[in-house]
Picture 1 (tube, rainbow, N blue to C red):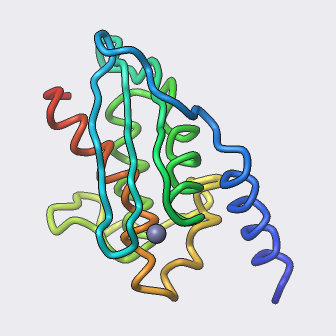
Picture 2: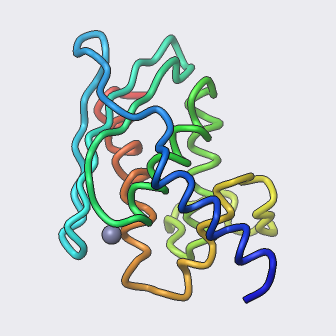
Length: 152
Ligand code: ZN
């Protein structure tokens, strides 16, 4: 096990044990979306508040495996305070890292630079365990669903 994998494991465990932006925002004004990964039993409740095109606040509640819950915590940290467009770029980059890019991904021809993902890069080892990829993408797919429901 090399140092980088040790660091990544530490980041995942840290976010699992001390999840960031945990809980639910009051609705309204927040929009509430639930996500479920039946393969693993992971559940996510995402609440989000937009201010124009900026993600003013986002919280995640739920339960499931360490990959799903740490990925949700990492996701909130990556998109909170960012524009919806920037969040979508991060989502596409994250999915490309896990080899589940959308077919209409406009960035697909550009070289993938996982360093742009910051701590999210800690989840790149999941690609070696295909059954866990849906755990890692659950929070992002729930975010995408929420943004679609809000026409954002
Ligand atoms: Zn899971």
